[in-house]
Length: 348
Ligand code: ZN
Image (cartoon, rainbow, N blue to C red; front, side, top):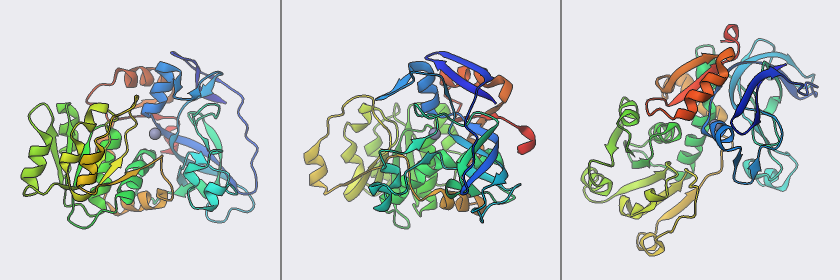
């Protein structure tokens, strides 16, 4: 099968590769339609590793996918050939203690697409467990279906935040995950979400959405702006989605008493934390690792029209131009929120 293979750091090829295609009774076979390029795919390309995960042999990239079911195992009843679907890319061991206790995303044995040594989905067909495959309604495109994966991160963060109707939230960082976290917070009932960044282009894209208040951190103090918007009380929830250690400077100044800080971005280095500032507000601190149990809710929000992720798809490339797509993604253009690869157009 043809696939986009990361041979080693900084070397991609679009070539034939042998991938396992044996299907169990609870699996489905899917023809891949669209795949979004994630920051993690780009990081494996440019650095060859993320923390302890090192690319030591050729690996197919891609984990944000939607496609069309072509065959189902004999014990699969909720999907049929022809169904348009999106796939949750992390497959846990469902008999593990983490899974049994309800935290399947934290199973140490989880097999996640395009996380070494597991191949990703930038190829023409994959076998996937039906339990982690979600049907898309007719009016949700495969392009939108491939946005469910990053949106799931935001939705998991908003779920952990326990947002109340009308709450004010702040999201630091207007990358794809930051914007999608803001949209998830609005869908969860937030009245307004301040999104901060230092890229005017990213803020302009975020600011298209009603309810999002963009804030350029070069223009002044974010905490002063939040105070102004909340009568001096502070935000009920702050989502840190930039991964920048600098975002932690004075982060509790943004928060209302008894507010919640959700850590979404992953800083590359250790971050010092003002414990007393957190205690003085009895801040609740939540963290997330990927997501669990949010895919069908993400699809429902898109199907209902409450969340529209189409404006975040900045460009799409044919499969043949996958390497060019990765080169563009690695440039990190500020106006590029999400780039997608069209693996098979007729599947869209
Ligand atoms: Zn991703």
